[in-house]
Image (cartoon, rainbow over the protein chains, first blue to last red):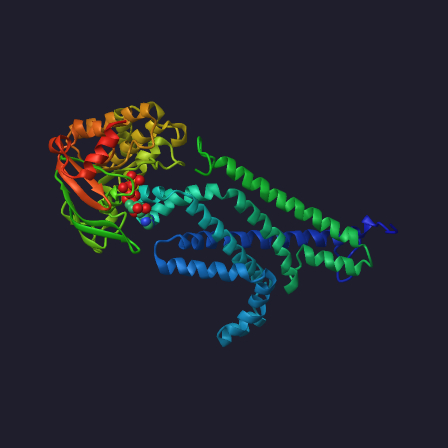
Length: 245
Length: 242
Ligand SMILES: Nc1ncnc2c1ncn2[C@@H]1O[C@H](COP(=O)(O)OP(=O)(O)OP(=O)(O)O)[C@@H](O)[C@H]1O
Ligand SMILES: [Mg+2]
């Protein structure tokens, strides 16, 4: 291989300013983490609600949940991002539309968080639904028979167990949120994928260095997400409970 | 206390209950038996509105269960129910299982609920396990906790759906003992069970169901003396012979 290694490239300043590529990539990491975490918060809250709705005994509610999941799960994330970025602003009332297009601060960031959050929420919703449905029907009846309302039955009986059961698949969704945040480069957020692409172009061929560092950083992020969920799993362990009965 | 009048119920086009009529008076113990699939569980779940009915009416303590205006959670809060598979809440300790309904539904304080819970646990012989989790208890112990949980709500009557049929023989007795005691104290009970020993000991009446219908409904002595229908006779000889 005739490759000219040059790790020093990270200490060169970027053409457009006085920061080094290293600083730039750390900023990129910051944006990646910010998008992923914000999107994850949206995904977890909306996904829990929608997944719960899908198991509701009320037909209409279940249907809304179903439509939500089908839309956000079946359209590619990149296309969804473009829809939010280019199409949705056009559909807004005139004044709001102008504001979104011209004055909205951090528009790229917010749109990316929204798109990734909604996309991931559909996947979380499916896990939550599966978790609730894996509990025996008797658990719901036991809650209701005690005098709980439907809401209380979810709150005190079904969801606490459902969430414990779905920690492993939720962990992979959390890690996916990090990996999928890379699409934000397409609307111009300076996150890690964007930075490494720029580096490849501007440094005249230091492809491996430019790609290896973000790769390692992604692995570290995912691993941290994994560790965090592991801690939560251990903390919420139920003595004597064996999954899947 | 419980009046079941001409109740019919369908699952889709399949009729599970056909024109069932019976009642349980205050202080009465009624045993419901019958072959698998005859609709015993369905009937008992209709009593506290866990299953809706299409025809007829069910009245519990003067409140019509199948009236859309009825506050079902409130009604259920004083109708205790015990399930075949215990259905304790696995993520809560035993004492929490007993306290949560009292606190969230009856509005008792934590201290009050714990105190009442410990008393009931003592009564069913599980006091020393109060801080364990359901998964750490044997089936018989879990079912006794489930009975205590139902009692913690100060029920006016108790429904049992095959409370011992998921248990090993040696655990059946410990659960039946608790139920016998309850019956002797005058609790109103509707019990789906095949434990004819229990029926002979404390039941006032025995109901025999087949194909969604109440085929026999007779005082205990009469029922065990000579059931009228062939079907009931066959069934009885089968379960009494092993
Ligand atoms: N949710 C349901 N949907 C459709 N059919 C049902 C449902 N639940 C019960 N059934 C049917 O209704 C009939 C009565 O069921 P049920 O559980 O009341 O019988 P059971 O007398 O309690 O029987 P077992 O002794 O086996 O518990 C059965 O044929 C059963 O298959
Ligand atoms: Mg049954």
